[in-house]
Length: 417
Image 1: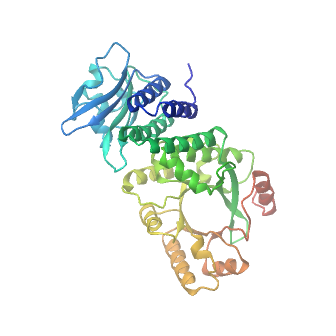
Image 2: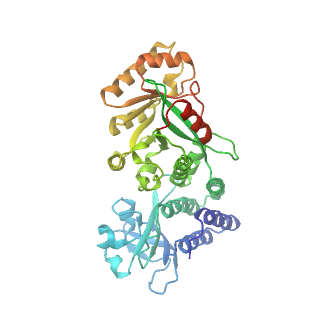
Image 3: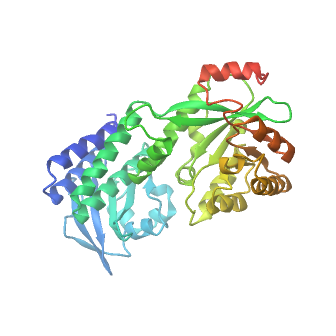
C-alpha cells in the first residue's frame, strides 16, 4: 500500500491537534500514531533524557512482540537515542544490518530492530528534551530523506507540545499549512537569469531563481526561511531544484546551470540523485547560506564527492558578510559571485572599486572565476570589464526569463550548440 502524501499527512495532523489543543497528551499521541502509520513502522515513541536514564513519555506500540510502555525507563547509554543526538548513529537507517554502529547494539538483535528513524526534540531554549523515534522489526529500504524531513517537522511540533506553548503550536500549524500548500501546488515557479561572458558577450550560464505566486506576497527568501523554521527547508529547496532542471529539459545548449542551495541541503543526502536531468558537469551549486557553518567537515566531504562527479561550486553574495568569506576560504569555490552591494555604483565609488579589484585578483590567483551580480547600468558594466570580471548578470543585460524567453536569448547570443 502506498504511503499517504507527507504534506497531506502534516495538514491532517495539524487539524487534529488544533481541535484538541486542550490536551497535550492526546496531541502527542495523535502525532505519534499518524507518523507511525504513515511510515508503516511498528513502534513510535517520545523519550525524555535524564541524567542517567531516559524515560519513555509516550509510546505507540500495538505489535504484541515488544513490552514497551509509557513510563518505562532505560539507561542513557543503551539503545539508539544518545548515539543519534551525538551524531554517532544516523538519524535515518532503512536497514540496521548495513550500519555497523547500529548492528552492534544489543537491542538491534534482541528486539529486533530492522529499520530505525530518530530525531532530536529541541526546546525553545536550545536544550535537547529527548528524541522522537520510530522503528520496525524488519528493514524497510523505501525509507528516504523525505521521511526524515517529515520527522523533523513533527519533532518541532512535539517540542511546542512538550512546553505547552499552544500559541506556538498554532503559529507552527499556520506555517506548516502554508509550506504544504506551496509544495502541493508545485511552487516555486522558476525563472532563469542569464549570466554573460565578458570575453565574447555570449550566455555562459543561467541562475535558477524561485518565485512564489501565492499569498502572502513576500520575497522568496522569506518562504525558504519559514520552511527551514518548520523542518521543511530541505524539502522546499529540493523541490525548487527539480522544478528548475525539469524546465530546462527541452532547452539545448552547453551553458551551465546555477542552483541555489544551502549547506544544510547539501549535507542532508545524496543531492546528485535528484539532478539527473542534465550532465553533472553543467551544474553549479551556489551556496547561499548567510549563517555561520559550525562544522565544515560534513560540507567539505559532500563538496568533494560532488566535485568528483563533475559538479562545480559557487559562493554567492561574496562581500556581503563574514560567513560568505569563510565559505570562500574553506571550500575553494570554482566561482565567486560578487554581491550587488559591491557592484552598485562601482563606476563612481573608489572604495567599491578597490574592494572589487582585490576580490577579482584573489579569485584569479586561486583559480576561481568571478561573476558580478546586479549589474544595472552601462557604466557599471564598463567598470567591471576594466577590472577584469569574468562574467556578469543583472537587469542591464537581462531580467530573469521564462524558459521560452531563455531559449530566444540563447539563440540571440549564439549560445546554442
